[in-house]
Amino acid sequence: MNCPICNKKTKARYRPFCSSRCADRDLGNWFNQRYTVPSEEPVDIDEDAGKAENPQATRPNMLH
Image (cartoon, helix red, strand yellow):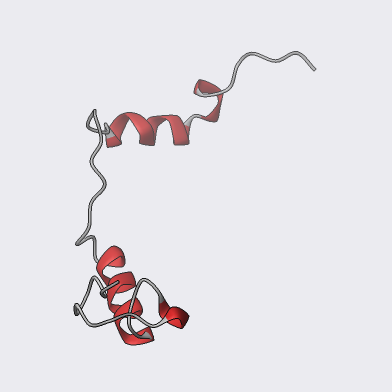
């Protein structure tokens, strides 16, 4: 198995990476949004923000 960052042979300790450096680089890529996960529908950020501001909008009516 080769490291997905530098293509060197991997070591069991850091698998699937060859070293902690490559693992850290991969994590940095995720943090900097260099990788994306495809979705079927675009997320409406404004709609989701409205739900967070009004928690009652996302909860069913409950009787106490």
